[in-house]
Length: 269
Length: 252
Image 1 (cartoon, each protein chain N blue to C red):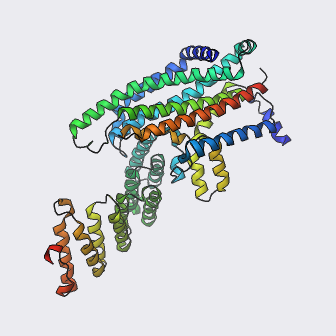
Image 2 (image 1 turned 120 degrees about the vertical axis):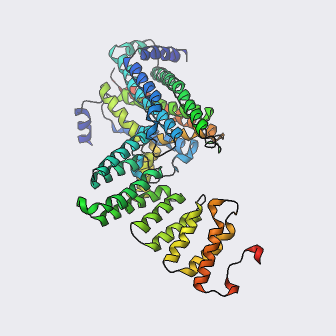
Image 3 (image 1 turned 60 degrees about the vertical axis):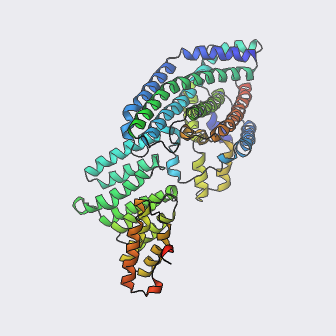
């Protein structure tokens, strides 16, 4: 376990030095702060919900892109610098190496999510306060912001990014170069969000239902990680949901790490 | 099989040789884990409410969908300003695909096509009937997302009445709206009005007699007195005998 944490800490340090992390973080922070200016576009939903949607959207999409980019970078950096050989020669197992890499990137994603949340929460709070002053009756029916709910929604986005990072790590063990791994990672991001689409095609009789249901069982459904409504809900139902989502993410993380270990054994290093 | 292996190796992207046994192993692990995750840990994932697939293709951009929908909506307004029906419809479709859960884009989009653009269709060379049909078709697609929303049925009734001039359809849509929870009071009154306009006075009378006792007298939006007056008006038109006329509980 100690070796896993050492690799994770080294991965985190290395990732923090990547320019892509700093760039993506700055862009995301600027976007979240800028949602105050974009709020006039809220034709289809209430203003506060629109701002929350944009903030969580940036958190979720940014974390997913970061997971793809960073996971690929840290894996191929190890391969190209030959430090992977060194680690394996020193008795570090393949599973420890992959777990350490995933843990390092997960910590980085957590840091990203926390920083974005630290920016998003004041934005949401400021708008809610301003709207409350304008329309005191608007939040009568518990439609106001809920801090615990905001945290749960951000946590779910982080979980999703971690599952994607694990899947990209598996892809990286299979890929010859980082461009291929990143491209496939982006495809995975779209495919993992499409489980509901396949189910819909199946229910419409477009494709054989068994095939679509089979696909639904093979891959994680990222739609389940969207807990943005929790930000406005006062009940504790979302806590149970978050616990179950954690199990879901851990299970898929373990599956992808397991597949990665199998793949790494077959890879010529 | 051999051809697939050859293609796999010639694409020069994979660091490992293709092996069917390994591929099968991957599938088995994914299926086993997937069944455990989807059926045991999160069973409602596979049972997630699935409506129209079109909008769900954009799920991967997550919360940024509303922004995209609003930008597409603004573009549709710009195309509408130019009188370009085809582009307006295209941007409207994009807006509703990006945010299908918002009734705003469906209802305003349908109105834009079926009423606004259809009204100036002759000048722009488009067919008014085709535009009215396109507007109604857009609203029909919205049904999969908003069937339980009374305002969807109110909007639909409005278009059936104004664009299609079909009072029968409008009456039925207002009735469906009025029977849904959270429906505005006027939906029930408009259902009766549509029936009266079609000469279905007995049905309108029966509907209003059923409606009136349910209206809260203290709520001005319910307009219980107005409904009462309309009942009397219909009774006069029908020349109903006194014993068949509507009486409130306290009058009996």
